[in-house]
Image (tube, rainbow, N blue to C red):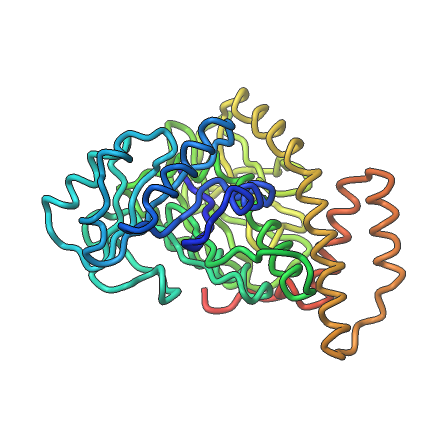
Length: 367
């Protein structure tokens, strides 16, 4: 399981939940206390009745959770888990775990990470989620890269813009949705990462990665490239058995990568990898076919949100009076390819324009 979550407020409504779903969030983190628990439970029932597939993590601060009748939430099909602050009582934590199917409870003695925006490990279990600030779109890629490389088992974005009326909010929303789509693309593989194994580092001059063995003859590696490059040669730090193939899991398509053995090393060649991507090694033909289908199904939305992000960022920079690169022809070409449903070309042009406009960094720092 790898949730792609959003933190909402006490004023969450059905419209807010639908807004989150439309932007490809699959989990909501909602504050609950003695004053609003009935309304939150009604929202959970509403989601279940409508078959939305949205999961809830209930966020209880301090001792307020003691005033919430837990039996009304016990085993609710939409309840994924709890986040609790400043609670160390073993019995209370056990009661919270008992209300959920998977026993997922995250407990902090100080309000981290859900108010401080930092990455924190759980003092009770080893699992943790990354808290990603959504207010500065140009910093999203680096935050998500750091989270995945450190072994985060979920991502929670800090806020969901309520509308698209302002250019800044519109850009935040489209950037958030763009990265939510990327995380949903990787979700089948990220959900397979072993919870009790942190993986091992793989560092070179131009990239940093973390590798997990997720099954017999199967590995996943998160790769972040410090410097953009047209062609990369990856030397795997281990040998793989005959029949295992290498794939780049990224938009606009799943890419099979050339791989050859050179002495005691395996060499993989990758042309124009994304700044943050997944390398997948497997010989499971059916799983590869499902991933191809999964990528193709998500591509239209990935293209749509990337194009919308370009337009929103362009509008915001204009409103701020900033000088823009000479890009009108490229924007026009992107829109023409969008209109003609040339999905891959439109997506790649949008990504290039986002880099030109400073929305996607050329280099990932602090990795």
